[in-house]
Image (cartoon, rainbow, N blue to C red; front, side, top):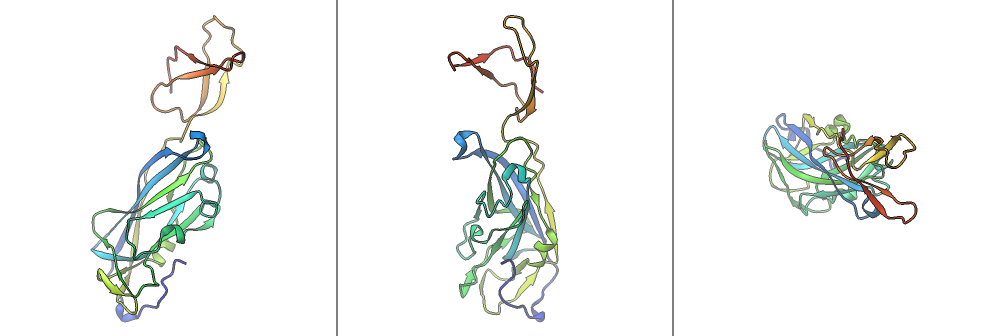
Length: 243
């Protein structure tokens, strides 16, 4: 799946070129399922290279927290992929595959059913090549999304030397090194209450209620309790601190 479908002649090997891969712009977005409780986790895949070349084939390995996204995210359709709009490349969603319960791969690669293709340039400056959307199933842990096995990525990574190339015998090069750059993301996709104390409070005594958990955000928010008699949600005023 991630290996080029034709052999390369030794004489076609070119100068050393490093491919740089980074995950960037992480964010949570509303999900269409889960009544608004679940969220999507989205980020971009950007590429650059040590010299200007043209993308031929590059597998992207993604490791993630399976407690947040579920195991085997590709096979369970918990991940969707968009390429940067070039019809001469395979749709990444058609190439995605699970490597393990918490690692998957998709390919930014040319459509080898075509005779001649227009390749996308990789410049020395970063540019967006793909957008990844992963559906969460649990907000109590961090997503921990990182670039996976870079050596396996490098082994099947290739570039073309021209923007318009025939796919039968065109000169290509293998990237000789790969540099990975991950984002730092420490937000939870939603609030999760782990405990609260005291367990019983008498009305009208100004008792302090302490709720502990994750994903409450960085600013003081609101809190409501359900009235057991009317099932109305009663707002609680007087929240003084959130850490």
